[in-house]
Amino acid sequence: MTAAIIDGKAAAAALRQRIGARVGELAKQGVTPGLAVVLVGENPASQVYVRSKAKQTVEAGMRSFEHKLPADTSEQDLLALVGRLNADEAVDGILVQLPLPAQINAELVLEAIDPRKDVDGFHPVNAGRLASGAPSLVPCTPLGCLMLLRDLKGDLAGLEAVVIGRSNIVGKPMAALLTAESCTVTIAHSKTRDLPAVCRRADILVAAVGRPGMVTGDWVKPGAIVLDVGINRVSAPELGEGKTRIVGDVDFASCAAVAGAITPVPGGVGPMTIACLLANTLTAACMRRGLPKPVL
Ligand code: NAD
Image (cartoon, rainbow, N blue to C red; front, side, top):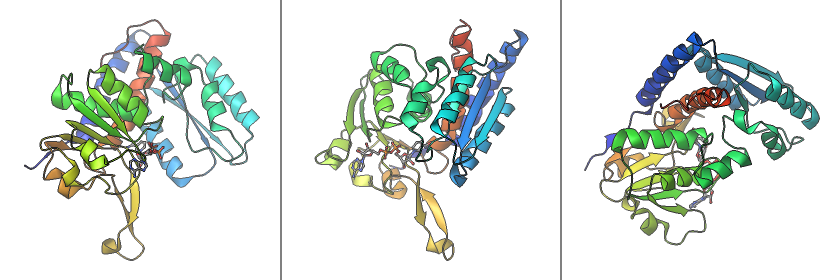
């Protein structure tokens, strides 16, 4: 079997278009959703992410507020900014770009964000709501994965899903979303015994580990859907001396020979993550004003 390649770029573009259309309708009611992104320090990867988030926010017709703070910003000053953004009526979503410098307790800062504006979905109130099946703002990467799965398969009820990785950012919320879709969900992690055998049970296999090419074709059930969340920079001497490239947690060639559908890296799950940030900003803007949650 040769897997269908899931085009995350196209899916993200289509999602951004639906978001743009809904933002256009809101504008007629005098509402323009706003996203505030806070960057502390000069981490180059974070700078790229923040620039891309701001650009896509504006392209979707929303307002973007960028707050760039020096690397030596104190925890108190950052908390004060979060407090001002919580109170700002023009701000519907607040994203504090991680990682934060060592002098700042990231957990404290994330918990200071008003859960109604928590477009990253990392606040314990939103994590708890997701776990209990209540409406919530859901972390962007697993939300993007779910949208790809729904596009591909429609109803997911009864399918066996295996999520490798149990982080609060990807693995746990992914498992909660799949449970809510009535999948039978296994969360695998670094202590799981016979991981290949566990993975071979999966109709849906999500890899969110951070280990380049860990999942190989012999771990995949024929016809399964494989979503590769991993983003790993590896050296690529074939591209020239000192060059690097990005690969996933899945060995694409061997898995694509067995799976029914598979996401590439790059161009799979990644593009959906920022699109889902825009979706969450729109959702937050609607929910805060008592408007129905947009169906995207
Ligand atoms: P994390 O380090 O917080 O969690 C990794 C998880 O993998 C842990 O739960 C750990 O138990 C598990 N693990 C580690 N080694 C393992 C092994 N040998 N076997 C089985 N499980 C093992 O990472 P994270 O934040 O969840 O991110 C995971 C990957 O996804 C990273 O490569 C990250 O860069 C990427 N990521 C991508 C996006 C995106 O937009 N595509 C977003 C977030 C994270």
